[in-house]
Length: 122
Image 1 (cartoon, rainbow, N blue to C red):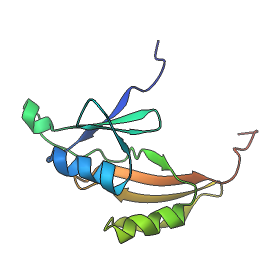
Image 2: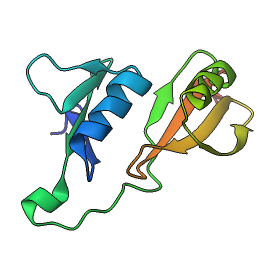
Image 3: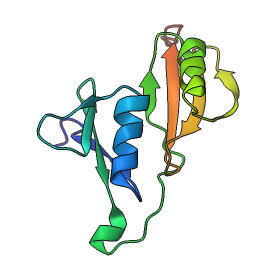
Image 4: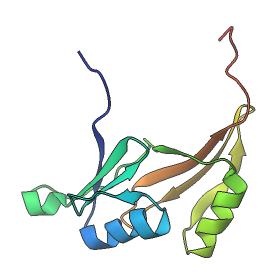
């Protein structure tokens, strides 16, 4: 059946702008063979323009890809220095830190770091 995640689709109204954000601002690795694909580990972020396919554009909301960082506060400060706007304070859930932001098209993203193990009883 389902064996892995092949890619995350990133809807955009300007693929070049999105590519710059994901590669230059966030530091994802550009794909050698596909201009509008960028990699984070083994996960591909595939940028596409729905309007070019006759579909209305709508940003992805409330399904934040959790982008792992070793230090959320430091990563947040670095991205804020590059102009990224975060929503609210960094959250501490008791097991992880999370900081929410969006890409230039309004797609939800999150910086994430788990600092405590999952409760074995949960």
